[in-house]
Length: 121
Image 1: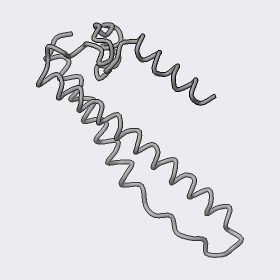
Image 2: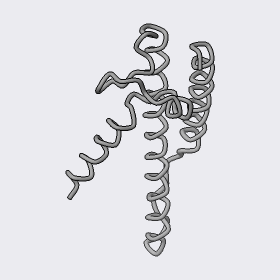
Image 3: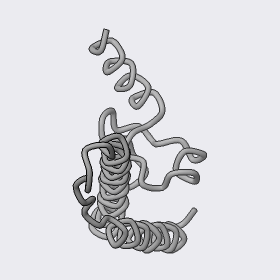
Image 4: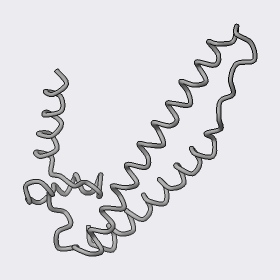
Protein backbone atom coordinates (compact mmCIF):
# COMPACT_ATOMS: atom_id res chain seq x y z
CA UNK A 1 0.00 0.00 0.00
CA UNK A 2 1.49 3.36 -0.98
CA UNK A 3 1.50 6.58 1.04
CA UNK A 4 -1.54 8.09 -0.74
CA UNK A 5 -3.61 4.94 -0.16
CA UNK A 6 -2.61 4.87 3.51
CA UNK A 7 -3.50 8.53 3.93
CA UNK A 8 -6.94 7.95 2.39
CA UNK A 9 -7.58 4.90 4.56
CA UNK A 10 -6.49 6.72 7.73
CA UNK A 11 -8.50 9.86 6.87
CA UNK A 12 -11.60 7.73 6.27
CA UNK A 13 -11.09 6.01 9.63
CA UNK A 14 -10.59 9.38 11.35
CA UNK A 15 -13.84 10.76 9.91
CA UNK A 16 -15.74 7.61 10.91
CA UNK A 17 -14.41 7.72 14.47
CA UNK A 18 -15.11 11.45 14.85
CA UNK A 19 -18.68 10.87 13.68
CA UNK A 20 -19.17 7.96 16.09
CA UNK A 21 -17.80 10.03 18.98
CA UNK A 22 -20.04 12.95 18.13
CA UNK A 23 -23.08 10.69 17.89
CA UNK A 24 -22.28 8.92 21.17
CA UNK A 25 -21.67 12.20 23.01
CA UNK A 26 -24.88 13.75 21.72
CA UNK A 27 -26.83 10.84 23.21
CA UNK A 28 -25.09 11.12 26.58
CA UNK A 29 -27.80 13.05 28.41
CA UNK A 30 -27.65 13.18 32.21
CA UNK A 31 -29.59 10.46 33.97
CA UNK A 32 -32.10 12.02 36.35
CA UNK A 33 -32.43 10.75 39.90
CA UNK A 34 -35.29 8.42 40.86
CA UNK A 35 -38.74 9.97 41.32
CA UNK A 36 -39.57 7.46 44.02
CA UNK A 37 -37.35 5.23 46.19
CA UNK A 38 -38.96 2.11 44.65
CA UNK A 39 -37.29 2.94 41.35
CA UNK A 40 -33.70 2.66 42.58
CA UNK A 41 -33.05 -0.45 40.48
CA UNK A 42 -34.19 1.35 37.35
CA UNK A 43 -32.00 4.32 38.21
CA UNK A 44 -29.02 2.00 38.82
CA UNK A 45 -29.60 0.38 35.44
CA UNK A 46 -29.66 3.79 33.74
CA UNK A 47 -26.42 4.78 35.49
CA UNK A 48 -24.75 1.51 34.44
CA UNK A 49 -25.79 2.17 30.85
CA UNK A 50 -24.39 5.71 31.07
CA UNK A 51 -21.06 4.39 32.39
CA UNK A 52 -20.93 1.85 29.57
CA UNK A 53 -21.49 4.63 27.03
CA UNK A 54 -18.78 6.76 28.67
CA UNK A 55 -16.36 3.84 28.35
CA UNK A 56 -17.35 3.39 24.73
CA UNK A 57 -16.65 7.08 24.01
CA UNK A 58 -13.29 6.86 25.81
CA UNK A 59 -12.33 3.85 23.67
CA UNK A 60 -13.33 5.66 20.47
CA UNK A 61 -11.31 8.73 21.51
CA UNK A 62 -8.27 6.56 22.20
CA UNK A 63 -8.58 4.92 18.79
CA UNK A 64 -8.98 8.34 17.15
CA UNK A 65 -5.78 9.47 18.89
CA UNK A 66 -3.96 6.42 17.48
CA UNK A 67 -5.22 7.14 13.96
CA UNK A 68 -4.17 10.78 14.27
CA UNK A 69 -0.73 9.68 15.51
CA UNK A 70 -0.38 7.45 12.43
CA UNK A 71 -1.43 10.29 10.12
CA UNK A 72 1.07 12.67 11.72
CA UNK A 73 3.83 10.06 11.48
CA UNK A 74 2.99 9.42 7.83
CA UNK A 75 3.05 13.15 7.06
CA UNK A 76 6.20 14.09 8.99
CA UNK A 77 8.29 10.89 9.13
CA UNK A 78 7.01 8.76 6.28
CA UNK A 79 10.36 6.96 6.18
CA UNK A 80 9.62 5.58 9.67
CA UNK A 81 6.00 4.68 8.96
CA UNK A 82 5.40 0.92 8.97
CA UNK A 83 8.23 0.22 11.38
CA UNK A 84 7.68 -1.03 14.93
CA UNK A 85 8.12 1.72 17.52
CA UNK A 86 9.55 -0.83 19.96
CA UNK A 87 12.04 -2.98 18.03
CA UNK A 88 12.36 -1.03 14.76
CA UNK A 89 11.51 -4.01 12.54
CA UNK A 90 9.05 -3.74 9.66
CA UNK A 91 5.43 -4.21 10.75
CA UNK A 92 3.82 -7.10 8.87
CA UNK A 93 2.02 -6.00 5.69
CA UNK A 94 -1.14 -7.91 6.64
CA UNK A 95 -1.20 -6.11 9.99
CA UNK A 96 -0.83 -2.68 8.39
CA UNK A 97 -3.51 -3.49 5.82
CA UNK A 98 -5.94 -4.43 8.60
CA UNK A 99 -4.82 -1.74 11.05
CA UNK A 100 -2.79 1.00 9.35
CA UNK A 101 -2.40 2.85 12.65
CA UNK A 102 -0.54 -0.09 14.26
CA UNK A 103 2.55 1.09 16.14
CA UNK A 104 4.06 -2.31 16.87
CA UNK A 105 4.86 -5.53 15.04
CA UNK A 106 2.94 -8.63 16.12
CA UNK A 107 5.84 -9.99 18.19
CA UNK A 108 6.18 -6.79 20.26
CA UNK A 109 2.41 -6.45 20.64
CA UNK A 110 2.11 -10.05 21.87
CA UNK A 111 4.99 -9.51 24.32
CA UNK A 112 3.25 -6.38 25.65
CA UNK A 113 -0.10 -8.15 26.05
CA UNK A 114 1.63 -11.09 27.75
CA UNK A 115 3.29 -8.78 30.25
CA UNK A 116 -0.07 -7.23 31.13
CA UNK A 117 -1.59 -10.69 31.65
CA UNK A 118 1.28 -11.69 33.92
CA UNK A 119 0.93 -8.49 35.99
CA UNK A 120 -2.78 -9.13 36.55
CA UNK A 121 -2.13 -12.53 38.15
